Length: 114
Image (cartoon, rainbow, N blue to C red; front, side, top):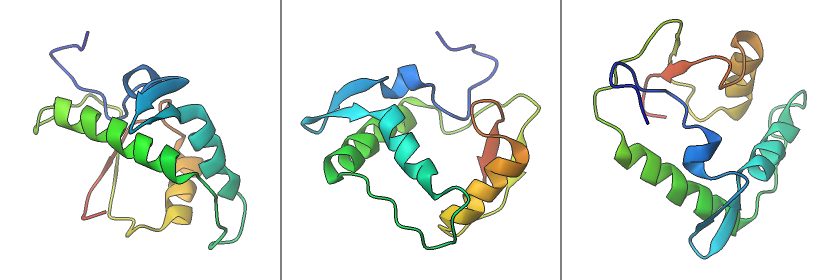
């Protein structure tokens, strides 16, 4: 159950389904998707990461459900890091996480149009 005084920024693995959750006809392997995405750490920008289409669809469906279940106005507790728009630059996002800590150890709010 969620605390009425504050909402969390990052959904827990339990909210998205760990390690497998049935979405869009395929089981979501969230840990596997995260591991694949982190393969780009330490690489030059432009490094391609292969994630199966079914996993991406399942991830988007699960994330959509989490977003739709949250209030439009979130009451957040400190400490929290506020970041500008990363303009879809994945390596910039990784750099932010490497500097400030990876979720869920650190909480972030990202501004902009994503």
